[in-house]
Image 1: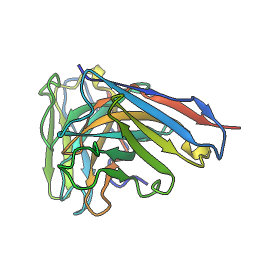
Image 2: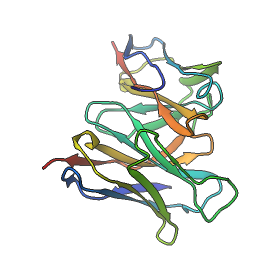
Image 3: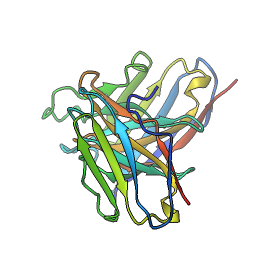
Length: 125
Length: 110
């Protein structure tokens, strides 16, 4: 069955860049039927959508990346089909970016149907 | 502030039923499918309902979803103590081209 696994540093300093990778196993990231996305959850708070990406090598859909407007200036999502991975890059982090970061598969109806276990990223000096 | 509005908490007794509301707008729920998630603290969210009212395989039919206009509802019947969790609604905002979540609802089973 499909499995997603986040990886990346658990602790980064303010103003640094957060880089996370999601490795997909049990299925191909190259699918016409799914996007791939990142969601985060600050401690004790609710879920916040960050970004979605559609494999750019498949031109079935126009537009392949989508970002939370409040994070758009700092976020980049990308996909590496050769490694069956997709990644998140968040620049200029602050303590407000401390959260559990989840990667997920996203249906064309925008449902997150498979999730990684999540990885806690703490921003602290 | 979450785009979609959910009640912070609901409660009901074991065996009873409960509904959780999710209110949005014409650009999000009004135009797109709604999904619902169950999250036990310390674990990843789990998809309960997609495309407004569809259950993934393995989700019992005690869980149901409905949508009307700019609002959606999650229903749970035959409540069990294991249903205690936080529940989130989500959809797509066509104006923002962005995913949006509700603030979450904590379900307590008495």
